[in-house]
Length: 202
Length: 202
Image 1 (cartoon, rainbow over the protein chains, first blue to last red):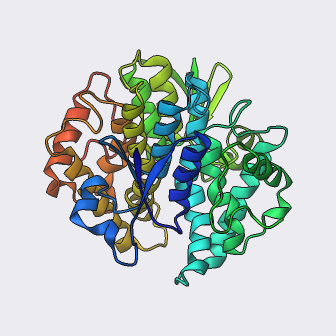
Image 2: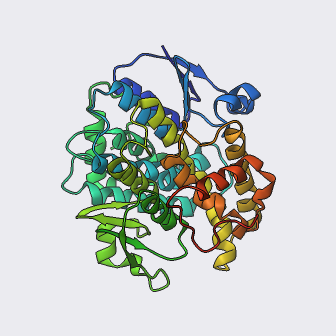
């Protein structure tokens, strides 16, 4: 069975939990205590030198990084449904995986973490950057049901989680009607599973 | 012919120029003046709502984001050589594409930009984060020639450029012997092309 090393509050970890559930895959959850720095032990760093959750161990194949794990699972277990196989489709999915890995993580996830963990940092800047991300998603989703193509893909899973948690960073997603309609579509998918704070209040 | 919208000093843009050249593909370079905010015009934002270079237009297929473009080109024109087709290989490439999109961009690229463009920002923090990236690359490359598998891939192209430019952020790469040996291997590839500041002085 796939082992998932994860920490409860991690949105990145939830991307993986969500992808696994949408694919109908069981997994063994292995909690990693971030306050106890379990993600910095030599054993953990041997799996992921970045010292972060999530990591999966799929029968000895160890993959780190939420985007990479979502791609791996979609490719291996998705029967072609969750990851395009043509160059343009894969390229467009990759556009949104980069957006999730950088722009969304360094805005939506940061704003949420500053409030949730009472950390010091520039909350206003993170909130403004979060709104820019929502604006980009909203513009792209005008006239579209999914980020890439005609069906949900790894791109939707990777971008959904921190967008769907943006209210925890005190950013109101309700001004972004296309994004909210996309939330509704994702949350209606068979196998959808939420985490604390998801679905968003609306 | 593939059109590449790019700005001269952009390391992200150079990832694409390098991938094109390694694949033996001609392209038409379309300069985008960042000081003149040409990346923020309505026409440009219609291609890339993030308002950044690079973007390619391959016979009407428009792709943004350096990692996404490298994946697209590798898949479409690489004859299977530059992007693994199995789930584990693709997942491992994706680990390094996320690393390039987030950790390396927000350290190595930032340190370089702070000095090159005389911007305000926390140079010491960017340099320290750059050294952490080099350390991770160096550890991974111990006993390996390439980041994923037995031959160069999109992962190497995406991670090489800002690592190879790290000296412009006043970070010395010479302490990372495995990284320097990897630089040498990449720079010896047929079709390798440098940019200002590449190859690194060593």
